[in-house]
Image (cartoon, rainbow, N blue to C red; front, side, top):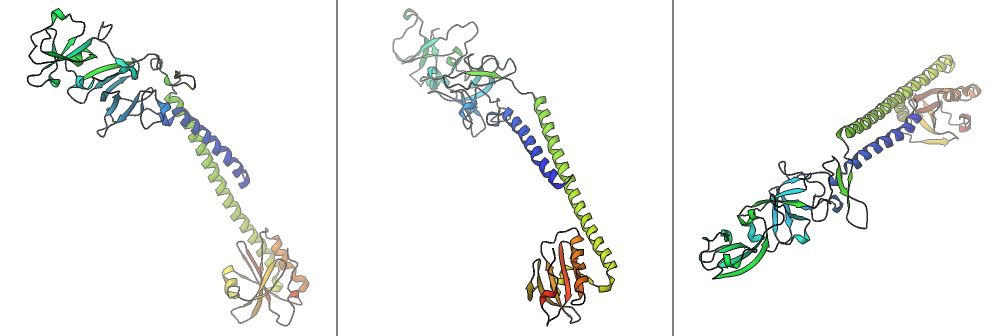
Length: 387
């Protein structure tokens, strides 16, 4: 395989690997991946989302955020922040807890009409009870219908919650002043700080029960959700294996191609040197000496004095160690396979009686010819028909 074939295959493997990784990335939808605020916190996924995620990652009203203590927080309208203890996506249920001891005092302005949630009713409870709160100037705890609210009471001014459906004949409201009405669970009235809420089954329906994912449907008419297949781990792993194999093959092909290129180049250089050395063996009459490129720089004093310029190179004045003056011709763009260099040296057959070849340089890609310097003759005697 030559270097050009390798370069043609490289983009093919690269884009194929890129396409597979892109498909894996899109199937995971990194922006909306399930997350947690802490190791023990509930998993957060659609219809819930964290506030720092894009809006399409969750249903409106299901925004959560993490506190400084890494607690998962849900904010109900006009009711403060609640701790999210558990989320059951199958039963559309979220378990909440107030972080303080008087939840009923923070629910007086609760308005679930602006929320997708509703209280989970207790067993066989068709509707939630409605309570009226009274602030009294005397103790009413001896009555069955009065539910004391200690966290809202102060000495000499107790607060009670009474079922709104209770008959006035059954309760003594003398010395009591009405405060407000609330529709709440009995447990909250009794002082429980934890309770559960449900969200509509129309949101995601039974996607989770079917082992699928839920997301917002791409429609501009109204908010709708849809179930989509949840890519299995085996499928993702298989794609990763394929992508990894292609990437590994790409690296292998690239490595083999690179090694072949350097090996081939080195072999070519050796062949070129062998051709030149063989020619010099046959060209004993001129007795040229071989020099390195570093020697050429030293002979010409770093190419200090220019004698002239021919069609294929510049001629510099130089001096050998034995004080012999020479003309050094540096051959430009000389990347041949050795044959051209041999031809250039062979041209001396035609001018041997005019100028003598003293030496040569065939150091890597550098080529140079060293001639006897004739100060009284024209530079035209130095071969210019080099190609």
